[in-house]
Amino acid sequence: MPKMITATIIITATIVAGLFWFFAPEAKASPTTLNPGPPAFDIERVKFAIIEVEGWNSKNGKLGEKGRLQFTFDRWSELTDLPFYFADRLGLSQFDRRLVDAVETKHIAALVTKIYSLGKRPTVYLIAEMHCAGFEAVRAGKVKAAKKDYASRVEAIYNDTASDFGRFRGKLDAKKRPNL
Figure 1 (cartoon, helix red, strand yellow):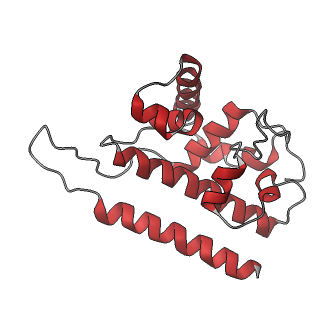
Figure 2 (spheres, helix red, strand yellow):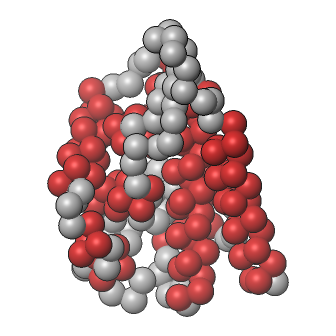
């Protein structure tokens, strides 16, 4: 059963990435045409920056959010059929933690797709803003100051790790997070 879930997640992530690249419009000469081009960010670094800002300490959020990206039950259910307790990664095997990593990556890819649907080019700031404030707030342009501050902090961490991110990759599972 876990192999089927893994295959489903991998296939879904591959399809989303393939569609993303296939349907990205080609460069046009007109300045009024949106030219998204390839993403100007590293999804793993975006995840790292969000996790650092969330300051996850294995506790649930105020609204019952779980995990390093503080997923709500509804958002988790939109992304996967895995049980919600997987989101917090506590006590999971290395195999199961990789499944959760795939769900986190799928979440970031879905945010990128939603940003494109708004006719905007995805940036680290917009991804973080949409992760924190939600699609409707970003679409309506009604993002609260605290959510904008959150996005700015994510962007700052992302930029600070630009030159030596390889050194930070291990921090995702090591720093103050034993047995994750």
